[in-house]
Image (tube, rainbow, N blue to C red; front, side):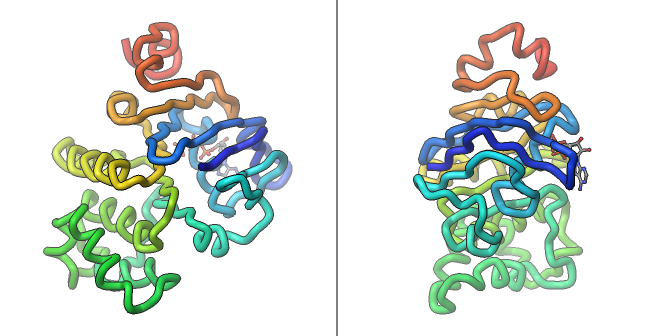
Length: 234
Ligand code: ATP
């Protein structure tokens, strides 16, 4: 569904990711793992069009989208829940969702919003609250919900579980499984490797901007060298 071919990206002359090739299969969850600074966020932001593509191709359903502007990529079905969430803090939950859905017909708003509220019922109880007044977990749900309001084919989620309580992480991961069941393709950046390995279908591990391991999550979990060297598990 999305194919990265030899992707390099970065900031000015600096290369954050070099030569990444990765295929995301429709209706699956791919976990993008690696230590701080490995290039995970840069990869997501490059796919979304916010970090410069220095080399290679980004193919969405076979079409090269590497040169089109970020808003057009959203129209083609790419959505991102970015690092730090970047919510509109002075807007209510409802209005954050409304902004997310601006590219959709106004008549679809309620239907799209209700889908998000079914995934995250907690947001339904906080519709009139300002985003700034939400807990960390609610903010994460809202960031994902706002991305979903564009009705994407692929959602990219950066650091899903960072700073959240285990109970809330469970809720978010259950929502991911529901999304996959509904046919969504998901690219998930996680520092919490146990969680990612438990839910993902495929895994890609980055180190210093290069791929050091790729394969199924089942194979990743059973590879002692990989888990010890890169994933901090034993
Ligand atoms: P983290 O989990 O810490 O965000 P990451 O794997 O997502 O790590 P990136 O944030 O993509 O890694 O960073 C990859 C490299 O790019 C790092 O060397 C980082 O210092 C550099 N980098 C990230 N953002 C910028 C920027 N805005 N300008 C210059 N260099 C950057």
